[in-house]
Amino acid sequence: MTTLQELIAQKDALLRQQQEIAKSIAEFQSAQRAGVINEIKTLMAQHGITAADLTVTGRKAANPDKEPSKVAAKYRDPSTGSTWTGRGLKPRWLVAALESGRTQDEFLIEAPAQ
Figure 1 (spheres, rainbow, N blue to C red):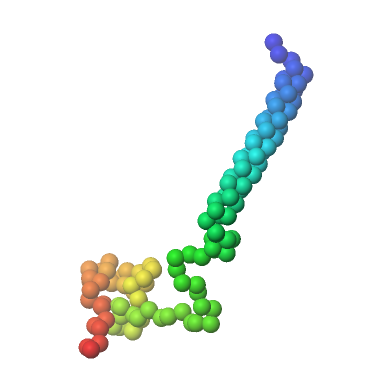
Figure 2: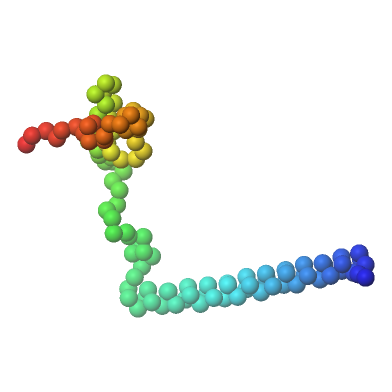
């Protein structure tokens, strides 16, 4: 039968082994990372890419001076005049109306004639 002292010794040995394995994994990942970074730098140099090129996305950069555009209301509650753009969660007034058997199309705001 195993004694408490032997179990404690086994536990300590396993903890040391776990720490050594974790250290080996960290060293391996660091070495891999360094190799990948060097490969990326080489490819960037070959293709004339700079770090600034990597931050560009396919979308236009946001203009901080420009206010966000408003979305026109698409639905209106005739009793209260509350509106909803059709984006995001449905407002409570519309949910209640739908539960009472009405359709969402009944609340559509007609587009102005052009």
